[in-house]
Length: 96
Image 1 (tube, rainbow, N blue to C red):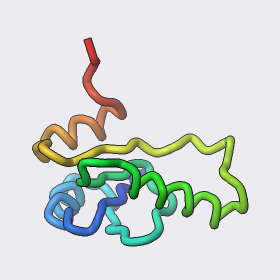
Image 2 (image 1 turned 60 degrees about the vertical axis):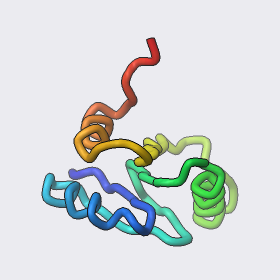
Image 3 (image 1 turned 135 degrees about the vertical axis):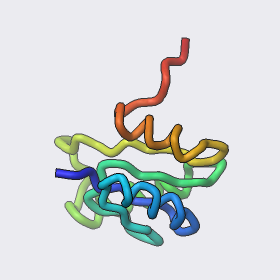
Image 4 (image 1 turned 60 degrees about the horizontal axis):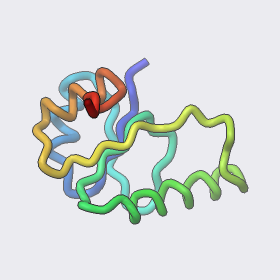
């Protein structure tokens, strides 16, 4: 089953790029639901994390402890191929 990728509004061109590679993509405004990967372009994560927390609480009443989670990717200053590499491997490059 292909991964579902939620992208911040304004990243529609990246969404098309990922769709042509077989991923399900959705653009989000206020709610993020059932996403394996969340891609945002802000220099700060606060707004994205607030949306995630609000989405999980509204779905379940309380944050889930059994959720496998979603990979968060900041698209700022990254190429499409760098983002694709991160999605395919499920992690960022090593720190060291």
